[in-house]
Length: 217
Ligand SMILES: O=P(O)(O)OP(=O)(O)OP(=O)(O)OC[C@H]1O[C@@H](n2cnc3c(O)ncnc32)[C@H](O)[C@@H]1O
Ligand SMILES: [Mg+2]
Image 1 (tube, protein in one colour):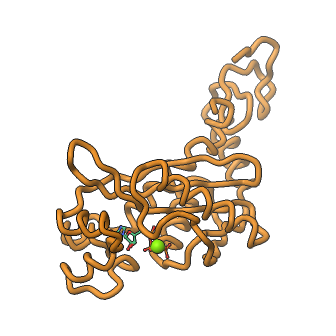
Image 2 (image 1 turned 180 degrees about the vertical axis):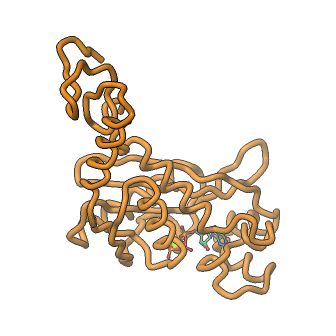
């Protein structure tokens, strides 16, 4: 980036860095001021989630607040236009993208967000992964969660067309497990919950939207 003749947008001295969407000198006070101004820009924004699953809605709220600041999150029932338990990264991504775009169309919002859990196979192991897509009406950004290996019976049932959540309920004895701690919560004694996986995927999808990164994407 060319800093020739560029002035710090806070104090007017020679600019040496580009941060929070501003040319800045390296003075701590200027950097702090620019950070405050950039956060102030992210006042209440409406974010529409393409799901009514409380785990996903809460995860989107926490992920956005961690990265972009205060938001109002609304969950809406939309079609993913993929199977109920997608297999393969491509189909899972498509489900998340469709949810994000459909939610964006349904609600007057700044961002539409889709989170889709899918099953990916690697080396004969079946991994549960969450894909998040954030759509702003023009471009989408994408992120993935940590993945964990599904117990064999769960993976086999998904391949037979039985949603993972159903088998997960049988294994754990927890009704609607996909709408609370998730199979991952049961398997890890709540050290990691499904909300954590969903929130991670949201934060990953927001990296390209952080002020300091925008010009890199
Ligand atoms: O209402 P939606 O948004 O569809 O919420 P969902 O829980 O069905 O979420 P997905 O469609 O994205 O998930 C596809 C399937 O994967 C299951 N699933 C994924 N991760 C899970 C977990 O950690 N615990 C239980 N089920 C899980 C989920 O229950 C679904 O049957
Ligand atoms: Mg579902």
